[in-house]
Image (tube, one colour):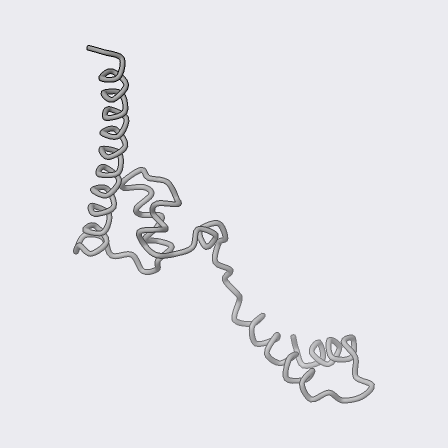
Length: 118
């Protein structure tokens, strides 16, 4: 074997390894799509889909979010659950603030909320 043939052989081997890697990634994505469409895996939200794919296939967050079609930053923040009473209070404070009564500042609004039983 000559030097040129050996060089060509190593180029072909590296190209073959790259193509095998691409094929394996494509097959993995296809399997994840099938799992999402299947009957056994029914998440409620897309973030649960990403977490489920992470656990099932042991893939990276990036690849699971790419399959689901969701941005990765959505996986890093927990959903904030707001108490019903707090939501009512916020809504009432916004109503009072939208009326824009001169001389009524934040403290007077808070005091009026306290008198109303908040």
